[in-house]
Length: 461
Ligand SMILES: Cc1ncc(COP(=O)(O)O)c(C=O)c1O
Image 1 (cartoon, rainbow, N blue to C red):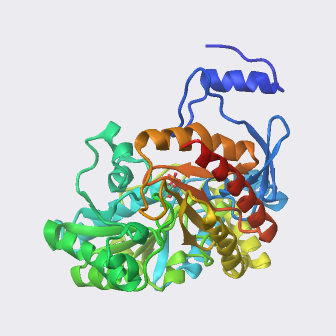
Image 2: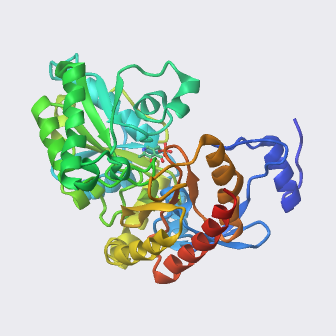
C-alpha cells in the first residue's frame, strides 16, 4: 500500500498512480500504457490534463446528451444531496424517484407505466430478464425462461446480461454463464447475402423470421423474451430494416414472448425521440434505458414495464424479488429530472431529428476514401465500417485490425483532436455519437479529422 498526501496532484503523479492503481474497464494495461486523463468538459468539448482540447465525438460513452459543463445539473445534484442524499426504494420512496417514474411513464409508449430503477444499463437488462422469468412463473407458464438476442449485440456485463450479449470473445473468460440465451442474426444489411442485401424490406422480414425460427426450435413454451436494440450498437450501428420491428412484434404476440427494447444507448434523443421504439413505430413490453437519462451527471438506469407485466405483482402480498441499494438514487433521479427539463426547454430531440440528415450527409462524404466501406446509423449515432477492398467488401485480417485499429487509429484520431471509438467487436468500425447539441461546425470537424487520419491509415496497410 502507498500513502498519498498530495491534495493537488501533478499530471505526472496522476499518470504514475493510474498506472500503478487504476484498473480500467475493458482496458489494456502494460508498462507503456497510460490512460489519457480527462479533466474538464464544456459543451461538446473535453480537455486533458495538459490542457489540450478534443471534440467529444462519443458523448463520453453515448451518455452526455446535453453536453458537458451544465451548471444547472450540478446544482440539481447539490440541492437534492443537501435535502436528502440517500434513501432506498426498498418499500420506501423519495419524491425525485416518484416524479421521475411518472415522467418516464409519460414519455414511454403504450401502457409501459411501471418503472423499476437500477444504477445502469446492464442492471436494467438483468432486471428485465429476471422480471420475464418471474412474470411467466406467476401467470402459470413456468417453463418460459429462455431469451433470444442478436449476434454481436452488447447488452452489459452482469452474468445474465452477458449471457444475452452476442460477442463470444467477451463471454469466453466467464463461461459458463447463465444458461438459456440464444442468438439470431442481426440486421447488418451491408453484409447480407444477395438478393437480401439489395432488398431491405425482404431482408427485414427474413431477419425477423429468424426469431420465430429460434422460438420454434427452442420450444415456444420455454422462451420468455427477445432483447433487441432499436439500432444495434456493437458491430457498428445497424438500423432496423423497414418492416423488421413490425414483424418482430407480430412474432412476439403470436408466441407470447416479451419484446424488450434495449435502449441503453438509443433512448433520450440519440435517435431523435425520448424512446427510440417511437422512431421505428413499435411498442415493446419492456424498455431498458440508462446512460443519457442524466446526461451522465449522475448514474441511473431503468426498466420500464407494461401494466400487464406488473399486474401479477399488485396483489398486496407478492413482490418482484429483486433490487439494488442505489437503484433510483435520489440525487440521480433529481439530476435526471433537471436533464429532461433541458431536453424540453432546448428541444434537443427536435434538434437531432432536424440535424441528423446533415450529420449523415457530412459523414457520407467520407465514402470517397478507399477504406470507407459503409456509413450507417440514425439520428446522432453512426458507424463507419472500414474495409480493405470496397468492391469485394473484404475486411481486415485479425493482425491488420490489431495493427490499424488498436495500433494506429484509436491513438491517431485522439491525437488529432477527436474522441470517438474504433471498435472491432464485429467488423472494424469507427463509431460516432456526439452530444445532441452539436451542429454543422462539429460535423465538419469530425469529417475533417476522420478524412486525414483514415487517409494516413490507408498508407500503413
Ligand atoms: C444496449 C446496451 N445495453 C446494456 C448496456 C450496459 O450498460 P452499463 O454499461 O450501464 O451497464 C450497454 C452499454 O453500453 C448497451 O449499449
